[in-house]
Amino acid sequence: MANIDWKTAVRSASRTLNLVSEEKKNEVLMALAAATENHIDDILKANAEDLSKMDKSDSMYDRLLLTEERLKGIASDIRKVATLPSPLNKVLEQRTLPNGLELKKVSVPFGVIGIIYEARPNVSFDVFSLCFKSGNACVLKGGTNAHASNSAIVALIKEVLKENGIDENVVHLMPAGRESTAELLNAVGSVDVIIPRGSAGLINFVRDNSRVPVIETGAGVVSTYFDAQGDIEKGKKIINNGKTRRVSVCHALDSLIVHKSRLGDLGELLAPLAESNVVIEADEDSYNALKGSYPDSLLMPLTETSYGTEYKYYKMNIKTVADIDEAIAHITKYDSGHSEAIITEDEKAAEKFQTEIDAACVYVNAPTSFTDGGQFGMGAEIGISTQKLHARGPMALPEMTSYKWLIKGDGQVRPK
Image (cartoon, rainbow, N blue to C red; front, side):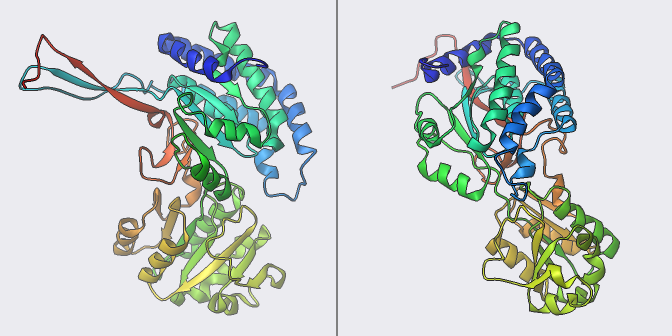
């Protein structure tokens, strides 16, 4: 789009989406899913270019990595979005006033949504499919380390749009570099909302520097509390899945909080983690309990920065507590309000935990790895909101809309 004012082009394209039927949108998404599968080699070639510039030991490497299996999964997610009901034109509220005015509150698109994200090229597909289905144009600003992948993906999307008679400017990829980030953050009047996806540093930067409204997502400092009445077999599976399923994602486990009466079970509880070479930063009590039952090479004392750290790697910390109140206090002090879990057979403890923990997703006897729009039955997600305005938790189609009031009268006027 050289020499073209992207702000004008995208805003204009967003208005044309109001005229595209739900059936046509679904047709386009199905075509994109098929095109993705048909162009796997092209996308993987671009992805390999990005990967060649990153150290495999970098925790972001897995987020950047695309595979044939992952691309087929992405295509499947796009098809799921196509089958979901449209979130638009839903009557949210309706009533008639005493003066006869008829009021109706209906869901509508935001208009133009800007997404700033790091390393994960799958986000380009997720964001477009959700934005397009919900009638929004999208402006994508991916990380420099994924620019070749994102360019190939957006080029494919634009080709599908053109083939289907849709204005290709409903999706726009910003150039690599910080200058374009600043341009997007200052696009007041051209972009309606910005959603950052990535590290706490990225989210904080966007929040602190954007002149466009921001919905915060992504950063997850996540804990699981193993209660005095926790079941060991359940605990082993939940902790291992929460930590090792995919260590680089925002819902991965960072901190295990354990009741002091269960220190003797720690060795058995964490045995599956040792098989994945998970490094444990343990407080004094848990360190002593694990000494001799967890590999010495993977066990180290707690540091000053252990708590409150989102590792995104095969590492986690342990905090020993005297009771559930201390566990809740610890989570409240250090965690990010993303996802928290308790492992317990005590129903009162479970209820207390879910009532008092202030997070977007609070689990009982299940791993935080389920915090995902797809797992919640929403199709692909645009992110996990950790704030409380507009959206909280997995953001999918319903969260991609605002609303407006439609008022119908018959000549009524407001009295002086």
